[in-house]
Length: 223
Length: 223
Image 1: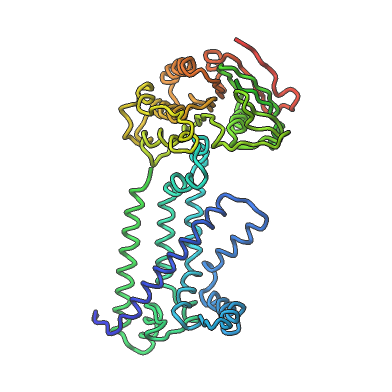
Image 2 (image 1 turned 180 degrees about the horizontal axis):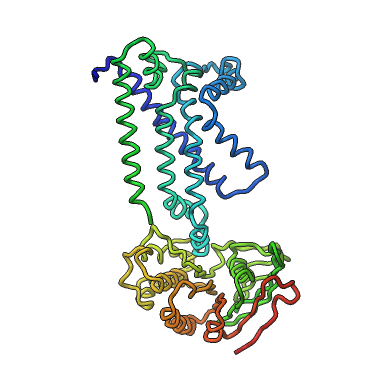
């Protein structure tokens, strides 16, 4: 197996997309999962099912849905086109696909983590005079940290490996929207075994070390 | 002096109590499910009564008539939780000073010196330990220090001896009695153990499970 890679673009794009997606997922996912972990409201089950849906649907279905939404004639796509913005077949579309598909993993882990925090800790903090934001930052969040980090890693890995939805909304344009997974697929298709196996090796080793490190880290985080 | 009239609809019965405590120890005695912890929650502001009035030293904390409901953060009521609810990710010292950084304490400067208090409870040497490294009795002393360092006007104790072995329990009973003499504030202690009630109680209120609102408060005796 040759480790010689002529085009590093897919590797760099994949990492960049996964990082940006994880930031977006974290910023949106933590408040949302916290809210859903503790609040009851009418229609909550429907909202939850909708959030989790991209996890269980085939990625091509998610991609098709995104096309309907942000495509040239899509609901959002038309409005964006009016402002001179076209998302489809750009690297923004790669980020969009990765974010939507990986979001449920963060949501599920963070929500489970928040739910596992004993409510008495928060109640105790309240009787000690701490406001709700301080309680969240100093009690709830630190105690949920292992679960949140697990969600972070899972969603990062999922974003890195996203294929189906990405292909539908962003295509496979070398130097523009080509990620590791799409590059592997098209390398195999065109008989370029060297490129395919190098990319496979890179993503496998990288993913292995991420999961390995997180497992070790989270073992140390038990109180 | 605490005065409280509280009614609360629970899923299986209606809670209806009247309490009046000077700087005494009031015991809420009854089997589990009789609504004892609920009463403490209502007093501390951790849950809301359907109707009633709570007044400490002339200050109204809750009044359904005036639609007044002071937050638990501003009630200045100490709460010792059944499992002590010490923050597991903080050291003994960090736990004890948690309440000191709140607005309430900064404003009126009523806080005590934490180290002095910890020493008086005989746990001054444990300040760098984490809760998981403490015995049951030590946990209780630390939790008491945490609740008292902010100078509450009322101390609520939820089954303070249930997690302790017989010997520790007997010695801590004595300590709580001494503590009460020193602090000169009302204590309300929840227990299902009649020995606790006889030893500690200035006033004992017996609660029975599933009683209707008329005869829920079925015994007030003064030792």
